[in-house]
Length: 350
Image 1 (spheres, one colour):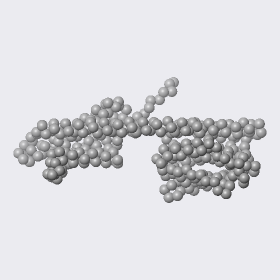
Image 2 (cartoon, rainbow, N blue to C red):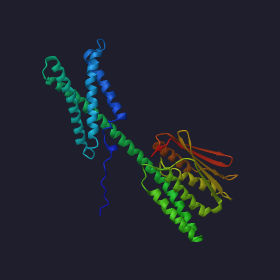
Image 3 (cartoon, one colour):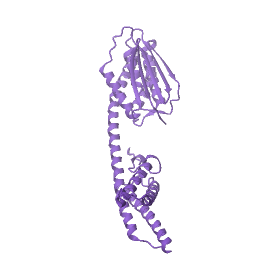
Image 4 (cartoon, rainbow, N blue to C red):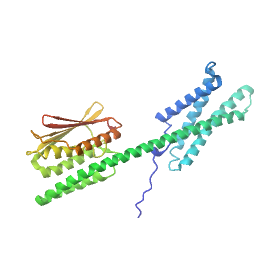
């Protein structure tokens, strides 16, 4: 059986924005308003500006824009998966059909009121279609260029994130392997329990989770990691979780919290003669979700944050900025033999 899986088309891959609602529709109406003003100025000039003509032109252009939006919205889910040239051509003709309808109906009604007959001036309709064709082609080209730019930016950001994750994962996995190796000789039962947790951690760390994970999954992975270290360090490692909010629907980048906890254990607790403690608190502060990590330090620490630690924090800051659209902060302070790391962000629910 082939492992090939056909990629399913996604609405996010469609180069024309959603014109049924929201930003896409507002942009279309803004373009229609500017074009209405442009045509009026071309016909009258600024000195003899005619508001009645502005209203007449605006009525036709806005009706064309809205009818085009209806056609494009209805066609959007039906055109998914077609080649790009076909999508562009079909949408182009749908706009022309909308423009033709909005040109023919007012023309027939106007002539009927004047002469009592349904007469049509084809030159007026052709003139309207030519203007609509030029405008539709320009707007569709603009939508395509915007779509390509978003794709390139997304690909560049994803490549950078994957590169940073590859730098984090080996440190995480190799330290866990060292813990397992030391336990095999001392306590096989604990080694078996550690191996089960380690398999879950491997699975979590190596899975492709580019779209993020729930904060609950991240916390579960961190708890498994601390269980591994607890088996190795025993009473020298003490930790406590205070989770004051529902974290099941809060989306975060994978391996966001685990490297911070690993560094707290490796740099703060493990070197201490009597070990130490770690306190993790998750809570809300207004619209922000806050995560505080406080770990103890030696009374007279030979504690020097290595360049690798700083690189890991800089990488994490970059990942947080991208994932939360610059709505995230990561701060560090050392005070009274405690190392305090605070992460806060405006969550993406779901």
